[in-house]
Length: 265
Image (cartoon, rainbow, N blue to C red; front, top):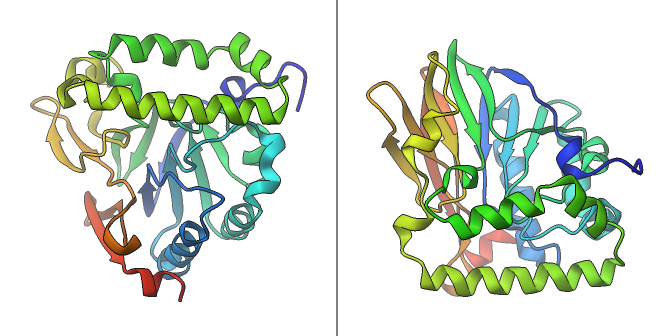
């Protein structure tokens, strides 16, 4: 990593042309949970023939403290690196893994996208984002987001010992969970007016994650948005997962579940 390199400066501003994309978000994978890896690797194995591009729109990991910890995610790195030999791979920062940097992207063969990014799919323009940038009713969160996405903050934190960064990440995750209980859902949801400030006149759709409220919603008379399902553990450690794909030129939301016994197969 260059002395002047940080995750926020490693992102690329691209206009994507996608043929058969899959969009996933909010997997919140924990490198210490083997079932998480078993499920992700099985998902890739079962679905990779159905897409040409895999676009990860944030929170792939539950937390990430810097690319110098990449060895802790060795299994995931190998799956992604193997996938990128035949498929295009794109990654965007989420609110949990915004410290993923250029070294990680280069190692797995991915492009690290700026947020938001415009994509042309089936000759139509779609705006891609993790989604938290549009949760503008939550002013406290936006202040924190601006700070941790700044060059100065990231440059400083990346020079702290790894153990210290892990403590910071765990504490931040715990505080985030506590604050979510206190805030109404409407405050943490995206704001249509904020989305429209990033749309061009050609934009017909928006695809994002973050809110954990999967579905299709109107943004305006001409723009709709699709919220990608998060991956979550349920009873008996079953795992429900989802993604957005395209069928007949239109986005569709798909969900599936693995029970605890199937995950390890």
